[in-house]
Image (cartoon, rainbow, N blue to C red; front, side, top):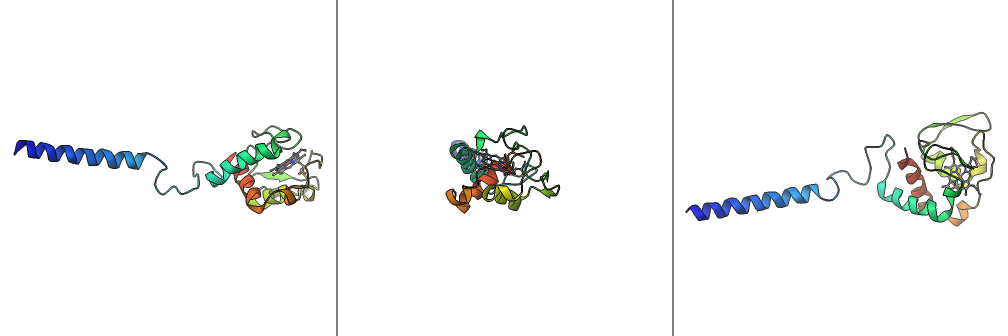
Amino acid sequence: MKTWAEGLAALGLTILLGVALWAFSGRPLGAGATDSTSPVSFDSEAAARGEALAAATGCLACHNIDDTSGTGPGWGGMAGSDVTLASGETVVADDAYLFNSIIDPASQVVAGFDAVMPTTYADSLSEAEINDLVEYIKSLG
Ligand code: HEC
């Protein structure tokens, strides 16, 4: 019965390896679509769509994805930070603020910047696309 036992052991090992491979390939189980390694949690699939959209829409002509300023403020580290507005008011860059900054940029102008951001995105982008852009900005820290 030695061969039978060996065969069974081999089969058991194969199943174990298969399960291990299945468990470790692909996304970690239970991680869902959110990335918990970033201090700001975001939807990684939406962020990937937002990244492509930011490039295609021309946002990156004015915004850097690190924390350096271009024509507009850098996006790196912006989400969740305190933003000082030209009005002197300080606001937290939460989802609602980021969303509003895209659809109505002139309503809350960041201190030290000119209000030159196009005000056309509310018309040219869908709500889902704007949400994707917000998720992308959040993915940058
Ligand atoms: C022509 C240059 C320009 C383009 C293109 C542009 N922005 Fe801006 N953006 C600015 C400037 C300048 C500011 C700061 C003044 C203000 O708040 O309006 C700003 C502010 C912002 C803010 C708030 C920043 C903060 O620090 O609080 C967000 C968010 C933002 N832009 C997102 C976008 C997105 C998304 C796009 C593309 C769909 C885009 N911008 C395209 C120039 C631009």
